[in-house]
Image (cartoon, rainbow, N blue to C red):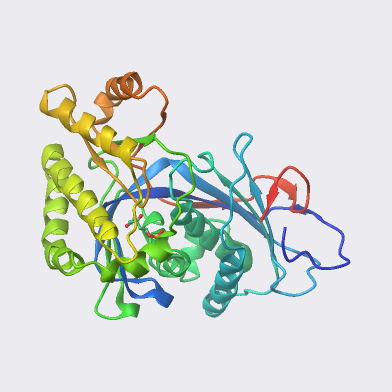
Length: 372
Ligand code: PMV
């Protein structure tokens, strides 16, 4: 727990609003920033919003905070583990920045009580920053302005576009988690000119994402650090020159529901991004032999006609296996038979972030939550 106002007793509070935001898996990746302080990406990217892996964040006004920035935050864990928070200061700074952005749309006064929960276990290789900052942004906007759902936010002028622009400042990829389906993040000619567009709905082409948890360890290099290293790779300029074409082709493959075409693109894309990582200074390795063994097995099984599935990888060792929903159970069985030590999360295309009334009463200072 931080920012506990000294001398204050903890308060039982009725939560005001609850936001949920899903994680998203990038099919064409954001790697490298044109402006690190603004999370302005060096390139456009394209992702699929998920539905099972999500963050739920409740927020309410504190009636008795010592100072407006004395936010209280608690993290509910899944199972026995605790979710490590790398940088709490970053969250508090983000909330204070967000408060200034929200002020023109309504009240943004007072400190917040925030309770966050991830549907996926800690250290399972799903980036929680995308869903986490998207949910935090929406919950804070709701609690501060009094809006109880997305329609009420929109009526105040806080559209999904606005929320997306804000969430990006917390974590770049969070801007895509506001929207559902297949989402394109266009960087724009200036840092203020970004556009985040859902280009196909989840209903257009539902796909399964089997997240194979090969390694539960926290990653040794944060994505912030990895982004900063990207331009030291001699491969980065080659990557940049081909990305517009790749994104166009990926969008066409989604439009035509052509899984083999999309799969071929996303595998090449993931390997290219990791090649940039591995040739950056200092060298950045996000996976090792177990992930390579998995990739080889997947490719061989596909070549042998045993499965129609393609992988992608984010900044970590755990492959996301993309396949048709009707094939997912059988492919899951094949994966677990070959790699019995792995955990597997079965996810699919989802419909984006939500805001609703507060769901529960909690004491932000009670035991049992991981204060962070
Ligand atoms: O949003 P960040 O700073 O955690 O960066 C995300 C980077 C990748 O997950 C590797 C790619 C992406 O586009 O999500």
